[in-house]
Amino acid sequence: MRLRPLTRRLPGAVAMLAAAAVLIGGCDPARDVARDHVTGLDRITGITRIAGITRIAGITGLRHARAAAHVAHTRIARAHAAADHKPGGPKADGSRDPREREWRLVWSDEFRGPARHRPDQAKWSFDRGGEPQWGNHEWQYYTDRPGNVSLDGHGNLAVTARHERVREVRGKRCGFGPCDITSGRLTTKGKFARAYGRFEARIKIPKGQGLWPAFWMLGANVDKVTWPANGEIDVMEALGRQPTMVHGTIHGPGYVAQGIENHTTLARGGSLADGFHTYRVDWAPGKVTWYLDDRPYGTACAGQLRHGQKWVFDHPHYLLLNLAVGGDWPGPPDRSTPFPARMLIDYVRVYAHRG
Image (cartoon, rainbow, N blue to C red; front, top):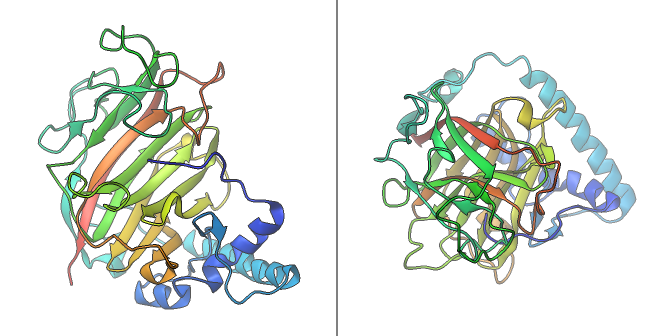
């Protein structure tokens, strides 16, 4: 959620190369799948790029890349077909099936309570204000008002972006935009942080031009070590104008604006804004793996880094939830953007490995 490039679109030929990247480069997906006990799925459903360059190892020529991409897509289809018959659903103890009972819940918020009440203040704090402190040329002004962040009375947290002018914004000089967008941003900084484990949230994202929902983490040493040296793990980012795709990224020294990114879509198409979906990372020493609805779609490893890049994911990170509006990556809202726009969060859960 910090710095973003103006565009992330890949040319057609490069996209074909990228389709095989997770299969043939980086973190040895076959080994990772065996070690993580993931049955019927390979880590080939995402696109991995490092510092804006698609990682391709051992491929020479477009013809060979097409062949590798064809193999990758075939295996994706088979894996998804098998996963569609996998029994079980999300449980608070992390045991979606017997193979995953190695996890224990260490922190969570289920967002139960009356409508318009604040989220648990023992767990969450509010980030407030507007640019230039966010660094993305965003338009919104974050508040702690119930109209922007509150429980909805149905077991969800509602983070709502509104087209409005409020008292605390009046008379202020906004860095970007016309000072008429408010929204919410929550953080567990100073209240909860952890290194390693399973970090998961069930979220319904909004759709619309300029909307930028996110569930992410920042290194808890941020007051002593400036970004990106403290580390950033984006569990979920999405663009409201492209609600069919989720992005998972890490940012660190040497991979700042572009980061190491993976992204994917729903197995059978459709919009992520049409319902709730589970976004997750499993974070272990030297490795971060992203999941959409329990399906792995990308992995970043310390061994992937190139000269001048540094792995900084070896210390506690705290959690953030926010709904940004505007900025370099999503672009500004327009007349088609539906305000108020809401990101609904069913729960946030953090697990530790029992081993």
